[in-house]
Structure formats: C-alpha cells, structure tokens
Image (cartoon, rainbow, N blue to C red):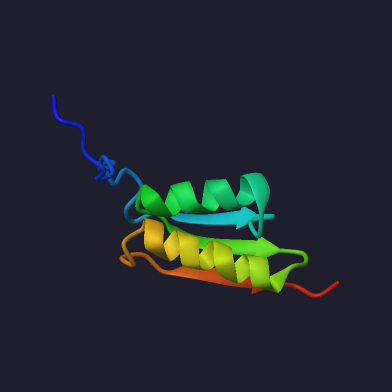
Length: 78
C-alpha cells in the first residue's frame, strides 16, 4: 500500500455541537480545543493569561477545522 502525506480524514462526529475549553491557550487545553475543532465542533476557548498563545490556539483550531467552524476566544480579567 503506498504511503501518503495527506492526513486521514476524521468523521465529523461533532458537527452541530459546541464546546467550551478552559485553559486552552496551551498544553492539554490547546490539544483538546484543536481536536474538537478537527472533529467538527464549534469551539470557544477560555484562558486566564497569555492572549498571544490563545490567538495561536484559535488559529490552530481554525486550520484543523478547515475554517468551516468558528472558534472564539473568551477572557475574563481577574
């Protein structure tokens, strides 16, 4: 079987679903937000600090979803 560099498409199991991911500016939260977007969910991320990293997460989520889902950032100053 020939090997390909194209990603294997995932079924869009979460299309029409919404997800709020807290702590999504980095680490596990970022990975979860990106994966949910990849699976078709509309994702909102929440972060305590690091707005630049939160914007990076949003960009990754939009790319992972093929820009078909909106990703939003939410921050509540302490």
